[in-house]
Length: 104
Length: 209
Image (cartoon, rainbow over all chains, first blue to last red; front, side):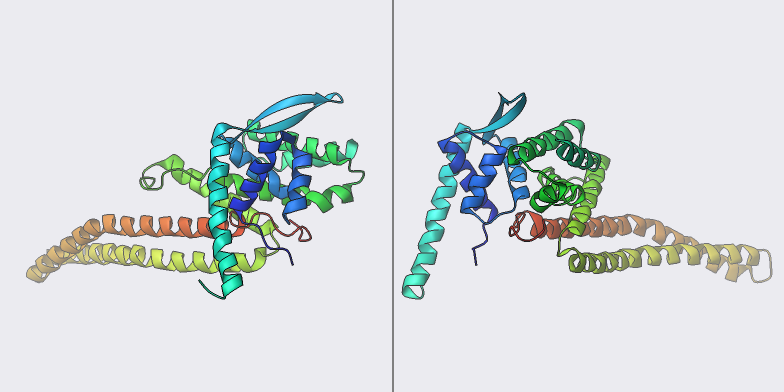
């Protein structure tokens, strides 16, 4: 059974993917789904929230007579990613500690 | 193309509570998404995103939670904030119905509502009772003033006036209780909403929405 992703983790994965390369909605959703077990309608709310908090910005590029909206990480977004990474490290350490030694 | 347009139009018409720009943005996102996904049938779309109704509910519930970052310390006097809260609650409730866990949660919500309603109504009813008894006493004692029992009339008139004044004094306290309870109710509903959406807004792929 896949482990359920928390909202922070989903945010972290989205920012991390975008930090590597600007992506548009569909491809980003597919990439997220290859890592986390989330539904297809879960990504937009997070993108909107992250954009509103100015961790991401968007720009449009024409594609076959229509637009594709790309998402790009801002400096604030990179900072936020560092925070999430740090929290994940601590979380991972605790869980690993329990799994390897039984407790603390 | 046609199936996507039809789906997006239905979605658009169900996002009435959002403003024009927000509505436009959501629909552009999903329209682009479905074109990139190269969906070929309505069934395929609904397997991905659910029905337009389910998707709209999910979106609106999310919006209500995000925009909810209005200061809550001093909102009791501000009508727009109360209106905003009511809107948020409406959206969350609408969103809850769209979830598979909707029904048990709705029952819990219903019980909460009932509980708060009772707690809130008790002081209101007591205060009303005080007013009514004060007025009844004053009214009947006025009639006694012009009879041989006028001292009794005086006594009850005084008592009636004191009772009415007590009622007036208590009104502000009743308001405090009602306001406090309403606030508690709103926060509880928001918490339920948060539980259902923010901590776990993305459900397992196989679960419908």
